[in-house]
Length: 304
Image 1 (spheres, helix red, strand yellow):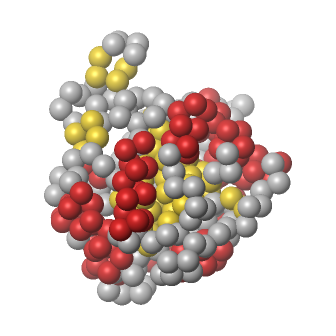
Image 2 (cartoon, one colour; image 1 turned 120 degrees about the vertical axis):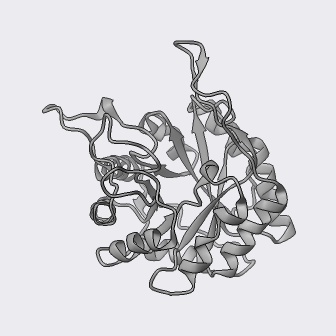
């Protein structure tokens, strides 16, 4: 990749689908588990305007996490048989404590162009991830932490880049944004990078899913134009924040993996799909004068 900052046309918006995470189907039954379900979901989302699909490999019947390289390869192969979206598989996040193990599937997948991912996400920092419930005034679990040293982060990034895969920098707070700046200064990350801002009302380590929470994160991003950021909202309706995202010139990372979107049910009681969410983002973006970026446009951005 070049160190020259690449730009995306300002009239384009990158829409990423966070299709399943480790989320169950209660209450929304449309969360995809199997490779064929993820592929069908990805194709529908591409038709609706998405250019990137972030996925977790899951057991087809139970939805339990599946971490082996063949599980990821099955999903990648199935999706590519259906559509041209960029693929962004998880590293397992806090479910895999050792960053060496966390990233081990990426070079295995990258050894074969047919299964090589386009992106892989790296969470820049260490965080408490005990969800807080203000109604009961309790944390759901008081022992959950997501810990990665700077050396661990560098190992993840170096391994991903060596596999000829681009890095998505995932930012939880201002500290993450500052690490992003440091890694770009050091040359650990390229000047042109996709960054996802993770907002959450339940995870108190992240900024809240409000206009102020988002704006304060954007304020601390490197201002040279090389960081192309998107907003995500874990446990909340990102569509309510969409006007702020568009006003600030950001992109969108949305999906049933982060929220069930019960408030978006149809008049017949039907639950929304990931493609429904993408279509709503695309509609609002077009109304604001921004057309969804194609997968090829995003690939060009990452390859400059």
